[in-house]
Amino acid sequence: MPSSEQIYRDNSEMQYQIGLETIEKLKVESAGKILDVGCGDGRLATRIAEKYPRGKVTAVDLSKNMLDLLKKTAADRKVANITPVQMDAMNMTFTSEFDAVYSNFLLNFLKDHKGFYQKVHDALKPGGLLIVTGFQHMPECTAFQMDGEGMVELFQQPRFREYAMRVNAGSENWTPVLKTRKMLEKIGFADITAETRDIVQQFPSVDAYFAFMQLGKLQILNVFPEELKIAFYTEEKRVLAQKLSAMPADQQKAALTMTLPAMILGARKSN
Ligand SMILES: C[S@@+](CC[C@H](N)C(=O)[O-])C[C@H]1O[C@@H](n2cnc3c(N)ncnc32)[C@H](O)[C@@H]1O
Image 1 (tube, rainbow, N blue to C red):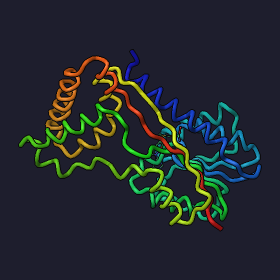
Image 2 (image 1 turned 120 degrees about the vertical axis):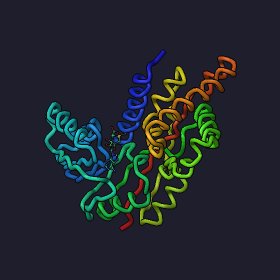
Image 3 (image 1 turned 180 degrees about the vertical axis):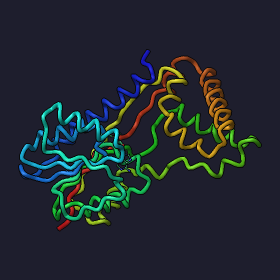
Image 4 (image 1 turned 30 degrees about the vertical axis):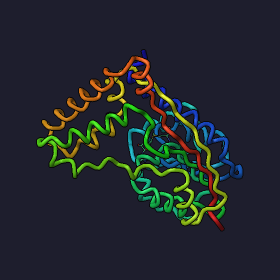
């Protein structure tokens, strides 16, 4: 059975594979300037820099740790045409500088997608290319739905009730293809293309499911005082495990299968 760490690694690997695939879609002149937003450890930014040895890659990430990893990756691979910049994607101040903007799986970390695409539009030269990937909506997973229903039930309990209204489940972090298209057109992009990919993963247990969802859970549970946070989390796990154990084994397995619907978007800044 895969551990939750393995599930993370698999998920990351699938995002990387989509990233490699989308690099193929990046087409600029050989000395072009490319911006990679939310570059992470640079595993893709360095590939882009290698693809365009005469070009210049600017790699932006919020996290200093990630940029340190990127510097190491670039040094190991002897890639010199890459400039790391620590910056919030939402506060980018580039103006008509880049031939292409590339962003692999940053999107769902950002609350204001329209604001992000506006910054990207500002950063591109007229006619410049945008290649962006992200998840278009919530994971499709029966356990996830059951967990959500369980949380709603738990919020009815008097000790949790007063916090229910303060929870921000982060639903605005998802923008499906159609809505994104409209957003991009409004901002001033043309030649919009969209492809979808499903990332499918199997959780071996409720614990593995919770371990994978931990980051999102912690954001949701931040509204609670510490002792109630633990109580809620423990109760949430117990309720989900109980619901699943009432199902036949094959249905439990199906319920713990998650499909993450990813999208690959391409667009050009209108002249
Ligand atoms: C899922 S990782 C993807 C990394 C890389 N693009 C890849 O595919 O390997 C998302 C990255 O976005 C960064 N990030 C999150 N919020 C950000 C923000 N507001 N501005 C810039 N980077 C951000 C994170 O630090 C992380 O490195």
